[in-house]
Amino acid sequence: MKIKNAYQIRFVLLALLLVALGWLVGYFSFEGIWITNLGIIIVVIIAVIRYLLKHANFVPNQVSYFLHSLLCHDYMIHFPPTHDTKLGTIYENMNRIIAQYRDNLLDIEYKQQYYNRLLRIMTHELRNSITPVITLSSDILKRPENYTPDRLHKGMEVIHGQCVSVKSFLDSYHQLTHIPDPQKEVIEVDKFFGRLQELMNHPSIRFSWGSGMTLIADEALLTLVLTNLIRNACEATEGQPEADVHIMASEADGNPYVMVSDNGPGIPEEIREEIFLPFYTTKQEGTGIGLCLSRQIMRQHGGDLKLLPTHGQGAAFMVIL
Image (tube, rainbow, N blue to C red; front, side, top):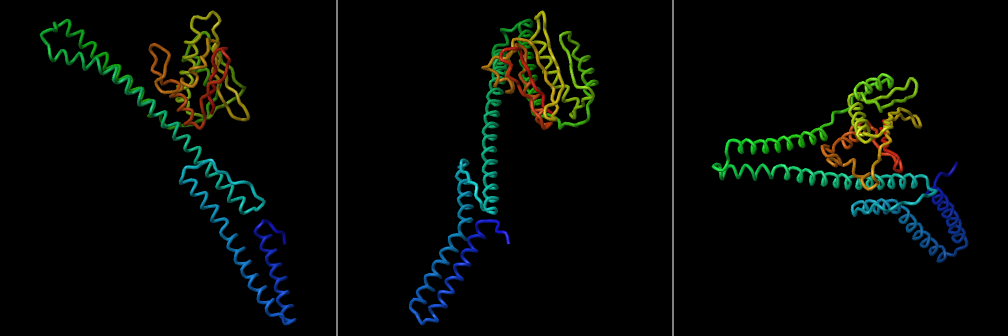
């Protein structure tokens, strides 16, 4: 019979030891050496009990250590590989659970930072928009006699403009947090790119794709993502004599993707990590949700949106499906 793990080996050796000691006990009994016989029996019993207790408690002790580490949020422990098949499987499972806990903790910390930043931005934007409304309306209520019809009209225009600004901001937030579930379908790239070309209608845009290539995605949501990226690329290259915005569909290791690249000034290194944050924008009239919304949409597809390194040679975004 093939011995598969260390526990079986130990118990086989223990059985052989017991047989040998049993033979010695029989031998000493036959020779009439009762004191020696009794001493051997006692030693054997103690040794066997200690051995069995040690190995019977080994796995529970390891599991107890594992659970204690999780309770203490110690996610750096690692159980080493072993030649024992069964124990090795237990170690692998415990290591995998620890890795999942560690990844979940990092994900929670990232999301906490994300939402804390989002809350700070919302608070800042709302306070800046509401403060003039409160100040102006309070002054009108306290000193109405100071306001001629013309001045009152201008004051109401200010209040109305600030309210519109708040509504626009809240609409952007609502859009960011209420992305519909993707309704995936097979999209023929040549026809899809043709519709995008008509929609964007910009002279610097060019498309390329593999013959007969298809994508599986929600066409409406994918269109939203690509129009955001193409519009940004067109704005980045505006005014350049040889502006070039290239949209390419291809595959890598069997996984389809769409690349949107341009030959504009590129994205500065210091803000590359910031551009996907909600409400972050470098544009005078931008809302700052385009890239964040686009990344969320692609992640709901099971893919991602990444900014690729270009070393100052324009910008390139990869839409991964």
